[in-house]
Length: 497
Image 1: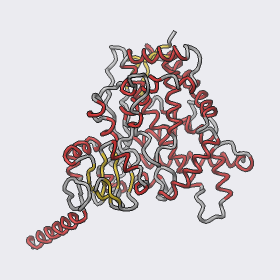
Image 2 (image 1 turned 45 degrees about the horizontal axis):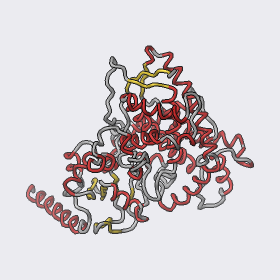
Image 3 (image 1 turned 30 degrees about the horizontal axis):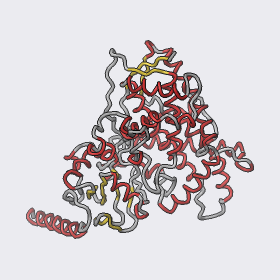
Image 4 (image 1 turned 180 degrees about the vertical axis):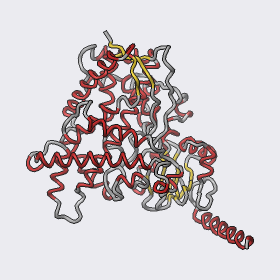
């Protein structure tokens, strides 16, 4: 009996091996793919952190590597050129959605982040126009929204520092609230006070969600059904609580805006415009404008708009606090262009090359989303003579680009000067892949960059950030989660005279 079982197992393994060998012809090289497990064993042995494991596999197999996550075929892109080339192809516009991301989407094709290619084209067009009409993309009105929020945040920082012993402030999701408020201002046309319970409830759940799991080639990516079997162990319980909070907030927005009634004749914000479209097309069975669509769009912008910008900004401020020479250089440039009292504006920013370099270096260094915007092949195509088969998932390994020693020389150091050329011009900007590549890049790139630079110049203009010797030295390696964040740290905030 045992011999029969062993023979059966051996036969299944042999058939699997031959079938996979035939399917793998023309595909990129990669580790051996075991039945059911795929390459999970080799990935975990290479490094427990997926993006580091991918870099190590690339040294053996090349920049384009085939892997298998359980039963899912995938390809990892480990170079700037391969990510740019593949992500600009129409056959690679689709995004896979599974696990808690599928649950957050009501298990439907909704939103803009994880929507199918067909829906994405339609919804992006409407969203782009809607945000442009209500400030998102209009320099003057968007700048006014940022200035209003920034003024309150500046007062908040000063009051917090003044009331803290020794002006020592704890930084852990410190900037999340204000950047979340910016995004919500664009969506619902109003700002929340920083002590608003609803705003803080949404922010807390954003933080809980992103700290509850890890994006990459792990067990949950290979076998997402395990979230139902082990909801606590996998973080799914926390994720669902956060998802329900997002949905609840978006439903409340729908309710409030409908009660106000502005959407009927005089829409005042993006939410009004979308509700107007819902009512206008409610008898169309094929309409994409539904309550659920709106809810997931709100979730998309809450998660993508606030989490990423705030974490990148936190990394910049941490390194400025650690490097006083760098901070002083930035401060002198700000004073020379703006002075010490006047609020910075976007015209000023055009003259502040070093501030922009700090921003680009923060994006390079922080790698908030190491596998930003996974893609899925919709039609077979060849790249560099390698077959990308329909249904294959594509992992862009952003850290391999951001920390490429051959290109950057000293990528482990935070050094804004790497983005400034010999004649003082900005260089290497195309190497910033934090907003994606190709057609399906981040729709909020303008808001993210403009808010980052206005916040950076105003806060350094008004305050000095430092790490006194008696405080523990902050860690500069990232803290893992669905996004990579800075570890919590303490810093001193002093009002500049």
